[in-house]
Amino acid sequence: MARVSFVGVVAVIAGCTAATGAAPAQAPAGEAGQTEAPDGSRKDALTALIKANRAGFRACFDAWSKDHPGVWGTVVLVLHLNGKGDLEKVETMTSGFASPEVEECIVAHARTLSYPPLASGKSSRFSYPFDFKPLPR
Image (cartoon, rainbow, N blue to C red; front, side, top):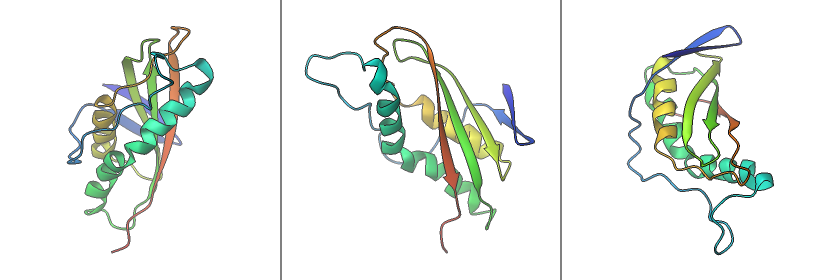
């Protein structure tokens, strides 16, 4: 387990399963014959991948918020990827609420995705913020 502190909130990270009911979307395909995402477009490819799978991440918060109405906040997903696109480490940082269940679910969903390789072969770190607000009842 890793502990990450963000705005005074301690997040405990472990694995769990996100029940989304849909298969995760894959990284956007590049030009024909291209097997690696170009350096400059990897961030765009990762952002598009996360957005394409937002429903799965959102389901983590929505399931938890049923028992915690009116709570909102931000979860920052931090991916540590090697040059081949393999996920080496996943972290989350929260502000506004503390929920190991939401963070564990988000980490588990992130582990189901396939990430694009980096042309340079170097490892990288990518952060994506999710601003969660309760759905109207």
